[in-house]
Length: 307
Ligand SMILES: [Zn+2]
Image 1 (cartoon, rainbow, N blue to C red):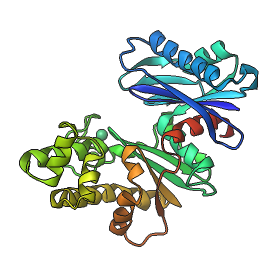
Image 2 (cartoon, helix red, strand yellow):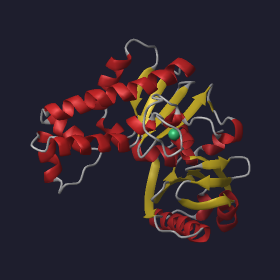
Image 3 (tube, rainbow, N blue to C red):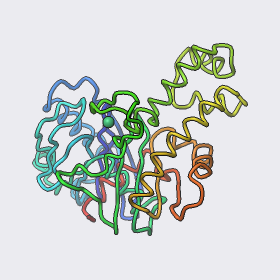
């Protein structure tokens, strides 16, 4: 058995993965508010101890630990160079965990881990060339070519969310203008829904938002769509077009066997993917929603020893 850790911007999820690549037990803790490197590492370590206790497994039965971290990572040295909102700076994450648990620890970028999970145990099992697109606050990318994770120079390959699709577009968090994630991330979709709901408050979409106490999330649009909302239909059609432009770019450059979509809204399955397939048109590249969902990152991290 192996432990896989999926570290995100606001929480950490830890899972026990068996030899059939299934998650036997998982637990998570919030990491938002951790002030410094030590506090964050202590939180991750306490989450691992929670998992060991909850699962009843002996530490001796754990073969290795893998961790997927957001941001810039150095895979060979097992360190996180920097990591968005997290208080890591050249932090030797793998060494700290290895010293604590006495196990070999593998580390990679979180998007790469999700792709590695789908490739080894999920919807993309058995394929050679796979791109995982994770839709969330931004758009994450993990690329597998000929069965290997494409790390690129300084492990910066796969930043597909920052491919520019509109040079006159919005400013991105990265500083450039018109990156794909400024229009096709879940955050961008939610912003679009908010603007439209303010513009046309007396719509099915407006009702859905009111029923949710004014909160707009990734599901709001899909709930309204299922109720036949015309406003939502037009927002969704525009979103699919913007998502499709970037997906087509990925296909043109890499011609993968499959593009897998992860992140909260990928759970909508064919409601999201079928119109996207239609938008892309005929291509040998399959488009599919993640089959491992929230466990993709955990399983991929636990299987980093296979690289
Ligand atoms: Zn950008």
